Image 1 (cartoon, rainbow, N blue to C red):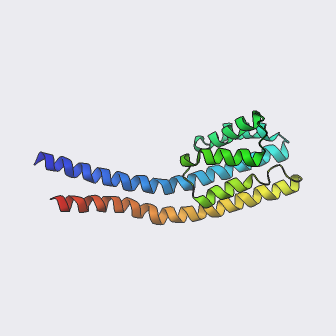
Image 2: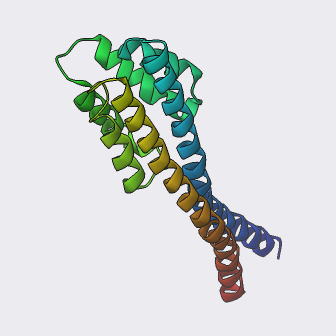
Image 3: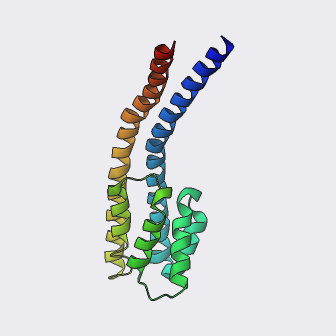
Length: 173
């Protein structure tokens, strides 16, 4: 009897945990999009208003960003500082693609973030300013969409995990 209770509790906890982890990914996406918006705002300030060189600005943003995304800017800074002959677009794309598994972002989010680098450093300050704002607006739209998905799917996966655990317990008993 005690063994049955332990198995039931283990099944319920493990199925709840699986549902919770799936739901957590939705929540992390919203947070990381917000962190990227803030980091791009910081990068914009450093480049456009303080005229900080891009590699130095990347390092500064890495120091000010949330730890879940700061490594991206730090890695990009390191690659730019090594002077490997790669331009910013190639460096940024490589950095994102090498570490894509550590991000909780969708393919569309990643595409927006990668596309951001295509216009970085190209054109005058006004063009750069427009590009920063455009990218931030796209990420804000993605964040709103992600928040809606989190509200809808996050709760569903939490409940689904518990219900799946209850179904397994009923089948086994």
